[in-house]
Image (cartoon, rainbow, N blue to C red; front, top):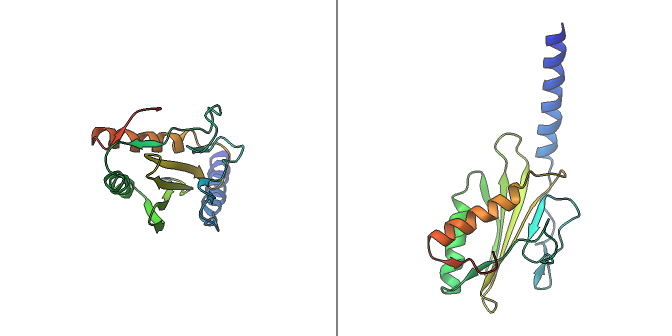
Length: 160
């Protein structure tokens, strides 16, 4: 009897979480405020290169390139597209928005990139659409992309 109750409770919990993950709505805007990304929420499930550098919870260094802006932009787009469960949501000349779903629960994260050729950077923003904690998944994703681009010789590690 206890096993049946436990199984029923686990099934209900799974259904609630799974349905909640599916209900994540696509943000209505690009996430840009002027020429920078909107601020991260207070929750620790967001990183942005436009956050204040003193905010260790949310700040992450931008992707700094020494190659041509076009080469860096093309390379970051390629690396994002090979990530599992990743879909391009919006693409403009200097802006990319990807949706990344978690493997098990299907939670959605938004990854936004903005090429800023005059600054020699690709600004980054990665945040969970729902929930509070993300176990540093968004930060790890951006650092993983950074490491791949470093290995390709596309970006430098100044400030990271």
